[in-house]
Image (cartoon, rainbow, N blue to C red; front, top):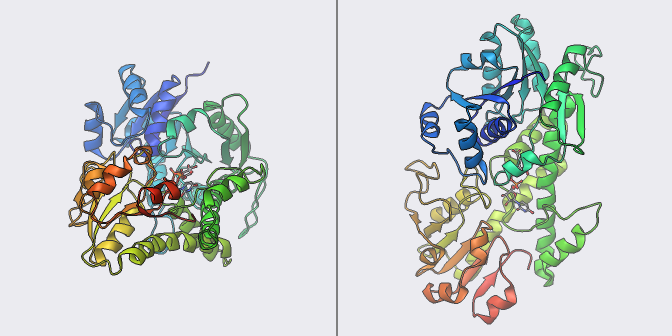
Amino acid sequence: MERIKIGVVGGLGHIGLIQAACLAALGYDTIAHDKDEAKIKKIAEGKMPFVEPGLEDLVTKAMHGGRLRFTNQMGHLQEADIVYICVGTPTLPTGAADCSQVQFAVEEIARNRSTHAIVAIKSTVPVGTARRLTLRLRERNLSDKVTIVSNPEFLREGAGVDDFWKPARIVVGSEPADPQPAGTRVFGSRPTATAGEAAAKVAGIYSPPGVPVIITSWENAELIKYASNAFLATKISFINEIAHLSEKAGGDIRVVSKGVGLDPRIGPGFLEAGAGFSGPCLEKDLKSLIHQFNEAELEPLLLRSTLLVNLRQRKNLIQKLEDRLGLLYGKQIGVLGMAFKPETDDVRDSHSLPIVNCLLSMGARITVHDPWINGPEQAGLSETELSGVIWASSPYEAADGKDAVLILTAWPEYREIALQKMKARMSKPVVVDGRNLFDPQEMQALGIDYQGVGI
Ligand code: UGA
């Protein structure tokens, strides 16, 4: 069997490290590049850059087994047959995705090689990016060094290792063979011979039996990723919209979601009403997709609404606090959950940040708690971010002497809170729950003024 060597750029990020560790666990000789020297030093000492269930064990075993190495030198990727690009594509002020790190990585790889490599783009990039980057390589006479394929990832933070082993599908996009008339884009055609070979090689790297493999054009692959994340976001906003009427009508959105999700055409996933979606992916990708529509002079009516409904969820939680406490100036509020979702310590683009900032700007005094984050440094926040906020070491400490508790992340341990004990420590028994963790009747029986979303 041919021994394929793997390179990963962005190898200490959430996607890159999972990719590198899992491929090394499969037996591939893997070298992961990251520009952050401090993180490389730390991982050599056994310190992980972030928490992800099951990852530390994989990384440690692969490093000890000599199958996983880390470097900050692009030149060290020279040996790799396939290089995965897993760098970030953050949102620019216009909403567009900033692809400069992807472009830089692709060109650096091409410049540093004496032999040919396949570059597989895992980063989420706007439709047309693989084509644009290939043209740039051609203009610079570097295209014989690199064949670009698009290989979007669908991992969820907090479940990334599991998602890697059990993918729902594998998508690989490559250059279509058909001539592309100037100024037009032809989707979904046969790949060129080289591109087809590259796509098959990437698809074959890890392709468990029974998992559908879609080999298609660059553009289709890029669109599949955006459409998937936008659809998930739309499902969440949809149920959040219905939650408003449910709340007014005295319904229970949890029962409504269950009834809706049991239809196999709809499915139960991503129908949990609450504070809405946040984190480094869904919102960023939605904004980028809206920007791509604008660039194409198309009107993204549904996508815009998905985003607006999501922002309204955050405002509504603050409104619910005001409805109970009146002016929030000087009020003491305990916020439970800083990570954008459970099972991660990631606060990047977490809804908790704008919500806490808004409460601070209204003059409220805030104490926060998160089971996996003990303070601003661990959250990667600068000194000026959330200044004045107190970090508590338990949900009870966060509730101590408070006028209200606001729940923002669905951590399983919050469901286990001893409610009587928490109530006894609060100055007013008000709980606004952005994750619908509790039963309103039970809360009422305990004498807690409880308000969820859509219940
Ligand atoms: C998302 C996608 O689910 C992954 O498939 C994709 O690979 C990833 O983005 C990416 O592009 O890298 P992720 O952002 O890690 O994954 O997390 P999700 O599980 O999708 O949750 C996103 C947000 O939606 C969280 O704030 C979560 O609390 C919220 N959510 C989720 C709801 O409010 N309701 C739901 O029913 C489900």
